[in-house]
Length: 88
Image 1: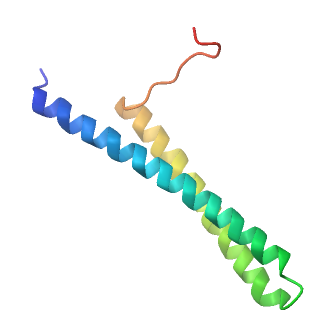
Image 2 (image 1 turned 180 degrees about the vertical axis):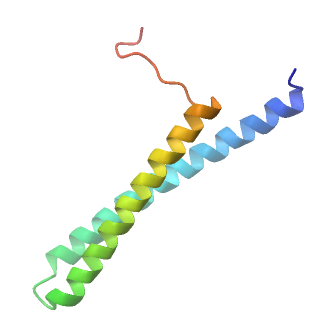
């Protein structure tokens, strides 16, 4: 049987999970924007800006994989629940 203290601890983890998800989404969008910025100014020094773009896209992919793994772990722990399409 779970005590009320255990339920409160799970609630704290769920709130922390939400902040982490939002932070990861913001970091993904930031890195996508940084790659676009590097692509748009690549005519000045293509080699340096190309490396910056690749680094930004690499971070974006890594963060996306981390977000997916975090969502999977949260689902397995019961913190999030999938729902049927159409609201059924």
